[in-house]
Length: 488
Picture (tube, rainbow, N blue to C red):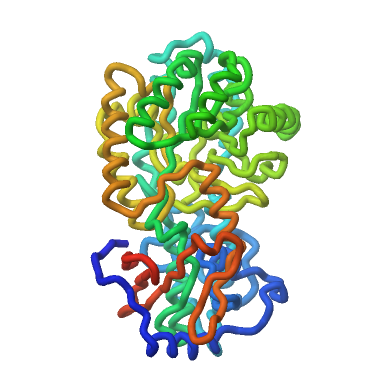
């Protein structure tokens, strides 16, 4: 997907009349009357007029799951009605796009797209638990970890990640499979209905092209002691961040420090319970700990949570009393738990909003890849911005204040500040992203005479966008902002 500098969109009467005619093609059937929810993920992504997406399954879904393609370079995992499903992502992948058909403006699909997207977002394709030996080794590592130094831990982590370059999926360094599936479904639906453009609720408030979010995980006493200095540095570049605090065992948590963070416009979140890496060892232990974690969330006034080392089991998230989680990486080749959600957009896991980690952590960059530049960060940000996604960072006061890393962080802040000055990117705290995404999830595009308007709370910040079919390619245009994006 590439961004092109094109003239600002102007909507004339002729175009408005075309929109009025196209609106008659949208079904009057209530969304609640459809039991299969085939369209749910696509609807949530775009917020098009009600029932614009109209899918039918091409047959009975298979019992077994597997890998397949949905057009070139779009890898999917799940069940299908036809075709062949590969046992691994490296096996032959059948292209299910050849099975798509149109019947009376309805799009016939060989799979349930909501199920396929959930399989990616919730990492159902990945063997997230690993084998029994891996679980034993992980417990052993965290048992002896307090007795080791940084050099030993780095060697263990490098050994665990030794084959990361050989992992073909998710795509490194940023995976946008979910966005690619949604954009393909939108384009196919437009072709099925014979319309050249369709309105939707733009992804970010006030016409922002994308979103940037900085977070700081405080892991040690030394990191805690650097928090005030890190806030000074962030403030000098005009950037606010969220600090994730470990509430037990790692260090004493001063109420004065938390108050200072809030008073200065920063945010406080909860990071695990004691950062021992065992939060998800068993359901029983998780439920015991989550009661204490939720208590600390209320005590600290924290709306967000992140697990230690980005361990996760999203199927257990209903026990959290937090508004949002920030524990699932976009692509996790270098993390202790492999996988990745394959999206650069927020998404709901029940009532919890997931704000995925979409860039590499500073610790991983410095200690596993041994890099001392911001080039990888820049590459990831550029890819995320091209897809209008959320670029979220994890930077630790424990590691970034060193003599050989401090200047790297300053370079990153300078780069982000330059983006802020030159592009319509929204710099936001996690709570702000959560508030916006929840409001957007309840918005709808409705007819307004011969045109369209956005309905819902906080609609004043929302911008009406149009997806256009230009020679078989999707182009996004905003009515109230000079942004035009072409999807390759």
